[in-house]
Length: 281
Length: 347
Image 1 (cartoon, rainbow over the protein chains, first blue to last red):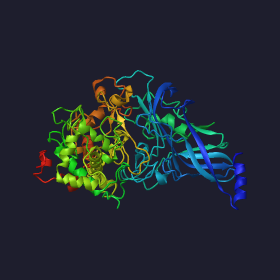
Image 2: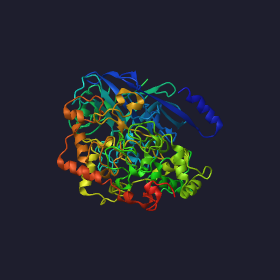
Image 3: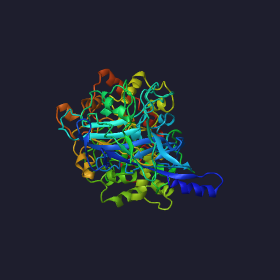
């Protein structure tokens, strides 16, 4: 915040109106408090304290705003960089296609870059996900990052808001033991005539995750994404038969029961708890 | 004048390498080379020998066979929308362009395909004896009017990029909005395909039903190589030397899949039903009750009824683009008695 004040004075002297100022929000990915890379496995994940390897770690964020001391929210205008940021949506990509991150992309993106009107801000808020207006388009027509098939479900479901894919190595491997456990967060209950047709109205469960930090200084603080607290009560060494491997947000998947509440989302008749995926330091 | 891809507005064109400009002359030269048996050392094979238009540019064999009769290790992949694939071949992640790839069938020695290894000067001379090529190379490459490694591979690449297939009943249903284009069974099959019980669409998704995609609008190519529980050795591990890559092969496109049997990298499955039952079992090892630690974590098996299998096959059949299979722009342009069709030397 201190850094914003000289900029405000400079803007006042430069023009009669307040100028916009550039802004970078830094993000980091961790697994149980350990910085995430594609080079290693991570211990202590889930209810069995399993050891997992991570194949993918990508997250969409949207609706980013700074919070003023009076609580007023000011939208961050994202730089339209033609790759990671499109309108008010950004893809954060913590994998680099090396090591365990098979089938990823070499490029990474760990920052949100944009501008805000000059002012005094004390906090940060954003949503994890893609807004409805952009979530159900055709990725063959969309610009990057909405044209990445790896992040897409189908027209009806939209995009994967969180894509973290694990395979557990901590238990003996048998022929019928599932080794894959994926967290795919997306909108569910989207009504349309077929899975390849976009819904006309909002989905029953949009499943965007609201994140808010009342005291956040972009110059000093980092947003940390960590899937370990979200999965603390999930068994990543087990998948309920006839359901997606892991929790892919679907209503019929019991594996989502201990997970969705820790994303701050209601699931079936379970009320939302506090979201634990995004913290700051 | 910009090249006319003749594709629907909704479709982004393929990416094109920086060292060529697409033109009708370049594509026409490539088309003639593609169907020319004189491209092989003994005149018996052309590219079309393993890539027949009526089979969506596959050859109906489990693995392809070269001019010496040596069988290769792989089933010839379909060339439908090949310009949208970021890598070529089933299991070599380093072959990143059609131009580079052409060198493999032309000059490869294990297996021998078209057999020109060490004999490229003969190949170039053989082509330039033909008046047609003297004119065609000059039209496509005014600054280097000759058959050489650069011009042959660029022309073949340009032609292959025009092999674009987006006219199937599925395309009409989804992209053109014609809700009558697919049968009821195919629509039921589509719901299954995109459902999380079967998870087909986790790898077979997007424009070409594969997680391998690059278009003119891509800022980063997407690749996908998976071990689908076939118990196969090799795969991209031969190039990455990483043990976990053993048995990982490129996800194929499912466009025109009804025409591209047999299936998998080694053509082991004759029918789509066999493929579906393979995935339903969770792979070969699972079927035999054995561990398969390298199998992709998303392949876990599923329950499926016979009626659902029939519907799923109906959906896969809706990916057949009849216009593409018969498009005169992509067929053999040589006159019927021409030496290009017999491999004989020009008179």
